[in-house]
Image (cartoon, rainbow, N blue to C red; front, side):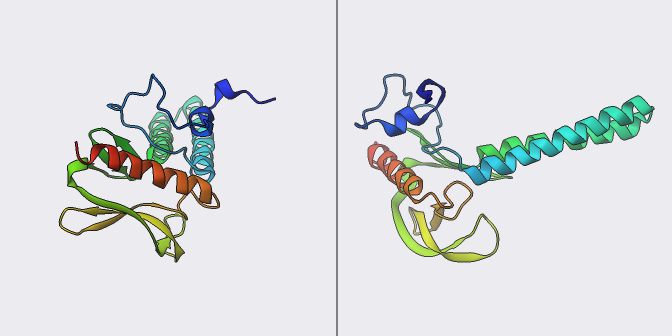
Length: 181
């Protein structure tokens, strides 16, 4: 039994791509859903954090409070890393384009974006050092620097070619709408 009121699919599955009346273009939004690899890794990290928290409670009940404090701190670090992993990706608003990574965030106003294009090139597989041939949405800054924003072999788009195409088209549409503003 489908429950469309519980998902964000309605905005993507609409026949006409009309902006919803409650869409606020001032708010930073990811133009795609996180992929199953990213969500699965975050879920496994949160599962690990629950076991670490259980161990911290057992250590605290046993009376070793310094060890329990260190274990609670480790669990908090794992939880923060899992939540940050879910935020990693490309975000857009009318103010510009934001690329969120695990340890850094880069924001670029639209007027500094020279071009966005999809190209065939070697891309990193799931963010690991191994490269494979794939597609990438490349941002060309004013001055010629090229930065890959999205790849079809990332944790969001691995084995989801249609989702990559939709996300690349969406980011290019945001650029077309706000680059001249």
